[in-house]
Image (cartoon, rainbow, N blue to C red; front, side, top):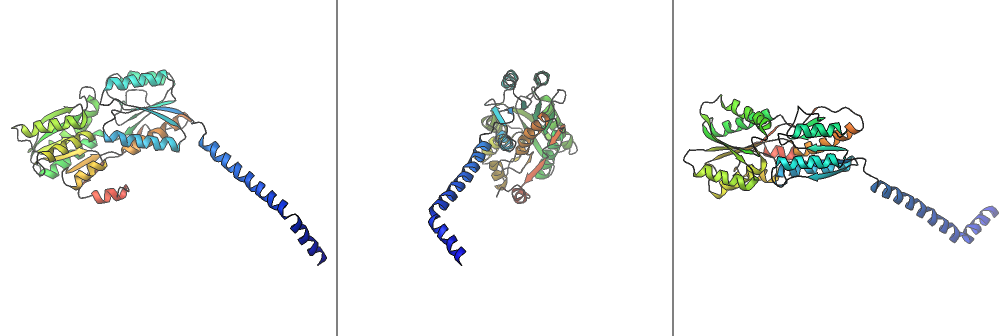
Length: 333
């Protein structure tokens, strides 16, 4: 009992000192933890990459960029972004040259056509790995391509038009960008589209247009289609900005139900048009995945790991019939 009384007396006399020591210890632990958090937050990015998109107005490239940004954060890298306002291969090549001169650690780029092979090879020769996205350049020294099978995209688009028109339609095609500059990419897409329609004699492609200014250009083209006396009653738009522009003009001119529109893309606005049955359906890749996986592929290359030469973003077909399940699968509701 005497020992217990002495212990209690000691604790009572030194209570303030003990509490003070406990506060100091807790503060030291908290300070250490905060230092670790700060150290993690301000840690230097492992690599500096450079991303070049086709343009800055197409919702598709906004999705790609979101994937790039999220992957950059997850992989502790910084990614610099550049793009022409409207599709301009020459500007893309200028951005490529800037990236090479700046000696970045890696480049992710859309391929606009002629001249890219030499520029990609120049980057490779300077020790800068390149990942192509959406459009490929298999003849170059790029490490990998993140995108979809363009032939399959064209084929699925044709199937949608056949389904929507009961295999009897006069069709106009609106291609996004400069057809001459992107001949290979669009040839693959158009080969899939044309070869599928050939099996149906009443599906006739009347005209092919090239859009160079996104939404506004597509509206003008759709206006000329409506005003023509060629009897065109179905349109395939190969780019998401063109799909939105054409859909808006069809609404403005009260042609919903009279002109079937099959497009490209899966932006929220495009999905709303599908839900309202203004767009019959679209074919789409996964732009977010393209961006996310292209950054991860560059990190693997820099760390000496092997990467697949084709990063498949897969072809998706979206119509009113599967819209609900599509939204649920991708948590878009």
